[in-house]
Length: 396
Ligand code: HEM
Image (cartoon, rainbow, N blue to C red; front, top):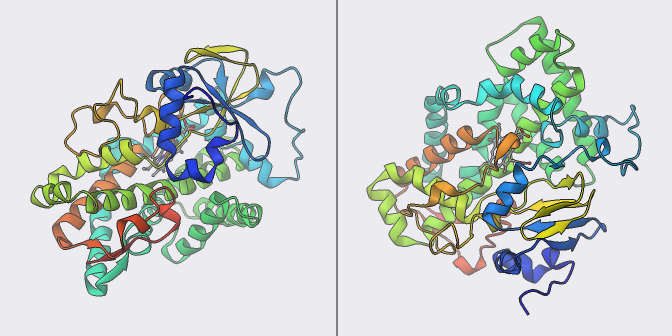
């Protein structure tokens, strides 16, 4: 029966091979579906487009549950625990008013106009990568095309000198993969950022770190942990996500030959490729879980107070009441603008303009300069849901 769910389905390897079937069933059930993760945390999955939007702007759904719950779930923060201190100050884990204050400090640097200034710089980087791919002949789409783009772009914006960039790429990877090295990477990364901040304090440059250091001096606006947390988040949030978008865009084009052909004939379609890739196979499956601050009614059911809410962007972006033929990849579709792959509301992705610009330039340059690009493996051997951590063998 469609309405029956095992509580650990979301983590089941069979479901992982095609999570969209699971989200179709959640939507059809017409209520949030309870799942329990391997650590025993309860998560109510919401997958309809309208319901996910409601969840993303719901005043009683948020992160700082300890402010609402009489018996706090969280142990008191140990001030010596730097990793926990930084984590709790991440923009993405905060509610207003701290969220509003911190986001306001950096949002100006990420508007469409602010990031458009980077277009020539990103184009030159894309040209170098594409020229290198032509020389190599056989390449890995992850390592040789996608991976170097976001790390270099955000480092340029923040002001991280080129020789140091490989190191913080490794720190981001350790933190994102939740490996045992994650906490050490957070602390080393923080020490590096302290040092960079000190250098910019002594000798300001035209970069984001210099701007933030200037704000830090006005102590009520930004403290040291917040500065480190903010810069770490910027460096991490855009890395795996943008790599995933570029790599999946390439994979989807090469496995849909008429659409690859259309892009080669008309590179201006690159922006449409970006949007349809975001809708069809966006990098974020479920936004970082929030809590219900009280009992709430949502999506035809009830979520009890203090339980976790899992708002599924993959579910929303394949909702048949919003998208025509939702399970088809179609760069010509008219309804693509309704996707919510960058989230919605106060946490809407800060780097959305930047990610769109980077991936659009990459798709344009690849279509123009690598017209014979093709998969060097059987498409069935490419795991579409873990791609950014694996390889994408390509023949140029
Ligand atoms: C294709 C690439 C990307 C995708 C799909 C993506 C997706 C998202 C999503 C869904 C959220 C909302 C999370 C939530 O509601 O809890 C988010 C937040 C965020 N993203 Fe992105 N992101 C991408 C690239 C970037 C880049 C390049 C940056 C670098 C500046 C970035 C920085 C952030 C930050 C700082 C937040 C937190 C915003 C807040 O809490 O107010 N993202 N992103």
